[in-house]
Image (cartoon, rainbow, N blue to C red; front, side, top):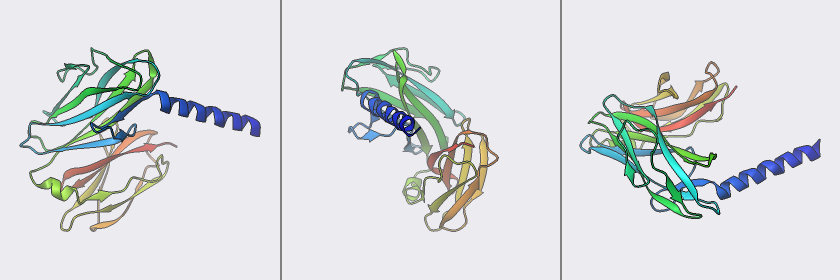
Length: 244
């Protein structure tokens, strides 16, 4: 039995290592790596017409790959819209999957992706998932989440001072906890939403710092998102996995 378990462990490690060395990866425009499934925050103000996320997609394999891109609108404010550019083509908000493919050579980057959020002066947060995959091998896929925030002018300075830790444990099956700190004189709220954007929990934070514990024992297995709101405006968002 020990030999079987050891063999399975070595096989899983080999598969993980092989994927990490040959799969797609993401980075910012300076080449700094971005972890898969991480949440990126794009802050804007009503006086700016749009918020834009730029990504580089790298092929870590030894052969060229043909890559498509798509958007998943997880939660979108009323009157807001999202469009993207990929493989030298830009698409209207009604297009969710790229019609053109980008051929990325071994070890090279595709540097022409941009995800555009038009907020129409609506304040709040919209969440979008950006997905990239190898057309000939759909298992070779990678994605990130983007929180497009629109704050009142001057709010970003205060929001930057607000902090919330990642939830733990994660995945969770009974309770999750997080610590927080808020700027002096500001109110904080934590909102828990399901993957469709529906609000599941609404907790007002007590004091400028502390620890918050939420029960998830009654939630179905799946992915949820928690957001810290400062004075009613979204400051940061993270992902929670519930698994019973």
